[in-house]
Length: 267
Image 1 (cartoon, rainbow, N blue to C red):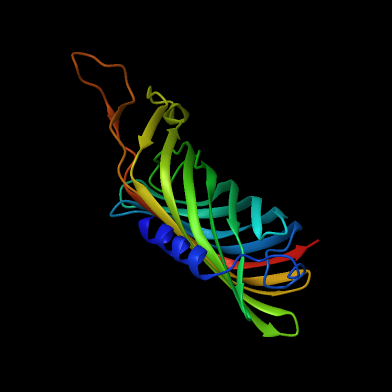
Image 2 (tube, rainbow, N blue to C red):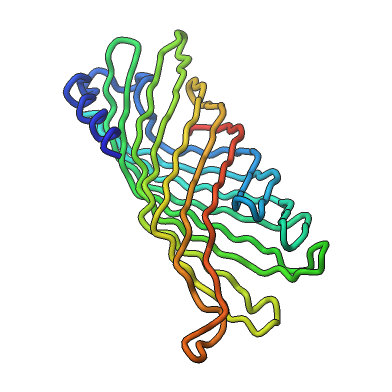
C-alpha cells in the first residue's frame, strides 16, 4: 500500500493533469456508461484440504464521471456465475456446485498525459459477495451446506494508456486490494446434524488484480486476473457451550484466483 501511494505521489509531481484542450483524447478516462461480458476460470483452494474449480461467466456494468481538470470517478458492478467441482481430502467430491459472485466498487483518481502516454492512479472502496451452495451429498456421503462470503476492501492502483495510433490504445491496469474486513457465514444447520450456523471474521488478507485491455472508440477487449489470499479466522462454536467446551472450527486460510477474457461496449 505504501508503495502504491508513493507511485501516486510521484505521478502527481511528474505528470501534468489533463486539462482544457485534451477533451476527447483516447488517453483519458472515457466518460459515460460501459456494459459487457466476461468469462474465465475460477479456482479456490484451502491448502491440504479442499478446492473448488470450474468456469465462471457474467456481466460487467460501469459508469465513469470526468471533469475538465482530468479528475475522474467510477462506479462498477460485476455479477458472475458458475457450476464448480468440489474435491476434498476428507469429505470426497461433488460436481456442479452453484457459485455466485457479486461485486460493487467505487474509485476516484486523476488522468495525466505526457505525449502518447497517460497514467491514471486511483483509490477507492470495494465490496465482494460470494454465495456457494454445496447442499446435497458428496461421493463419500458427507452432507454439504451453503456458504456466504463478504469482503470489504480498499483498491489502490493505476491504469496506463499507450496510444498505438489510429485511436487504438493499449491499457494495462495494476491494482492492490487491501482487505478491511472479511466475514464468512457457514450454514451448518443445512446438515441436520444439530450444528448451528457459524459466522467467522477474517481480519488478515490481501488481494491484487491486473488487466490488459485493447481499446478503440466504443470498444474494449482484453484479459484479466483477480487474486485473494485470506488468513485463518478466529475459532467459533457450532454447538452450545457446555462445561466451557463446544464443537466448532475456523474458516481456514484460503486462496482464490480468477482469470479470463472480457469485452465491453462504451456508450
